Length: 136
Image (cartoon, rainbow, N blue to C red; front, top):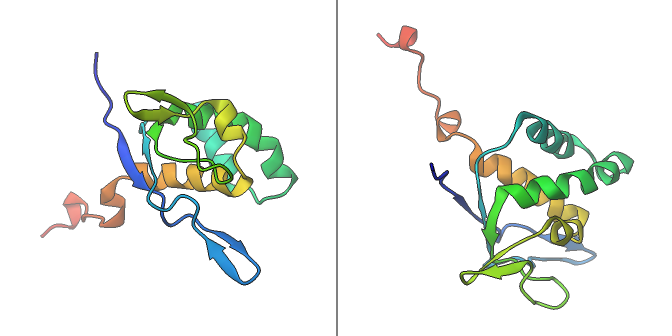
C-alpha cells in the first residue's frame, strides 16, 4: 500500500474580525492535509472557494464538510467556545468528522477549504521554471 504524504499547515493566520479588533482562535494550532481528491470532490471544493458567504455558500457548506473530513488527516484545532479538542482522538491527535466540520463557522470552513488548496499547490507554481524550449 502506498502512503500519500500529509502536508502540515499552520492555522495561526485565521482571524475572526469584530468591532474594534481581531481574534485568532486557532493560533498555535495546525491541520495536516492529505493532498488527494477525486474530481467530483475537487469541483465541489472549488465551488465553495469561489462562493461568497451568501445563500450559495450556505447550500455548499453541508456538502463540503464530508470532503474536508476526508482530506484532513488530523489536526490540533480546539472548539472556539470551550477550548476542547475537536474530533476523535487517535494516537494523540484528533481526526475531525464531517459533523465536527459542519459545526464550524462559515469563516472556518472557508479558511480550511482555501488552506487545503494553498497547502497542496505545487511549489513550482510559486516559482515557475522556464519551459525547456525557453532555456538557452
